[in-house]
Image (cartoon, rainbow, N blue to C red; front, side, top):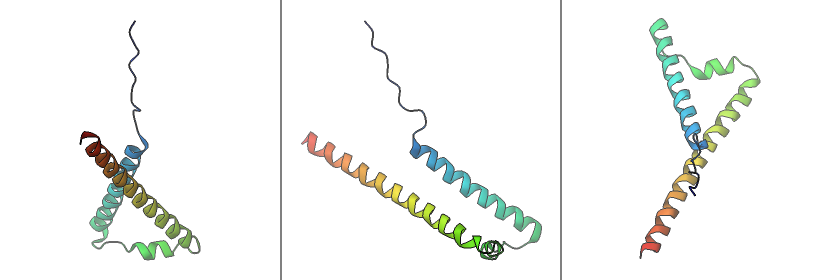
Amino acid sequence: MKSQPTTKEDWPMGNILWFAVLVWFSSSLLSQSAYMAVHGLPYDAVTMLRTLGPVYYAVVVLEMAMWMGLLAMGWFKLRRARETRRLAAVASA
């Protein structure tokens, strides 16, 4: 009797996160270059955010939380890779 092959998850959350970061970075870069093509100078993001009024602080806090989350995920991934490598070295010894 044949056993059913198991498939891995198609889109792990880590891959989706990195795709989102890539899209965000690329869109920021394209936005800045389009603005520079029209106006000749880069836009000032701080001035643009301050036009939001009190919502400015919420946007800044949200962005900081996103960066901290991204750094934490990267740190945990690095730590897990090192632990896996260490366990494999111990098992082979």
